[in-house]
Image (cartoon, rainbow, N blue to C red; front, side, top):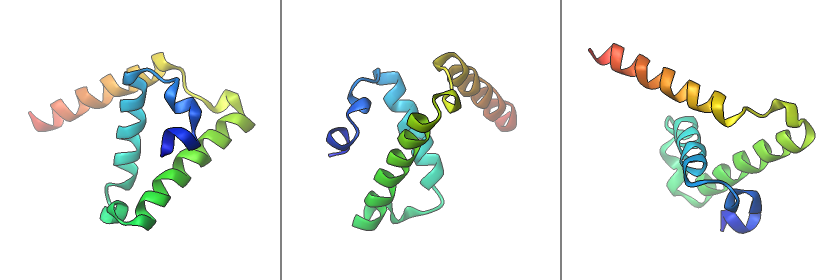
Length: 83
């Protein structure tokens, strides 16, 4: 299970977990092979690489406030495009 391999995921709030999920979903959207064992392994590898990036350089992380700002801006842009 991912939470066992990435225990820091268990410490995240529900909103943070959804954000990680959505980011991964967008990143993998063009590749629908995530339902295969290889695809699932790819998702785990992405999560692990992102965690290592953070461990090696904590300043590379984005604050929750910045993430929320990006999400709101993205949603506003999507709404404007659909109008």
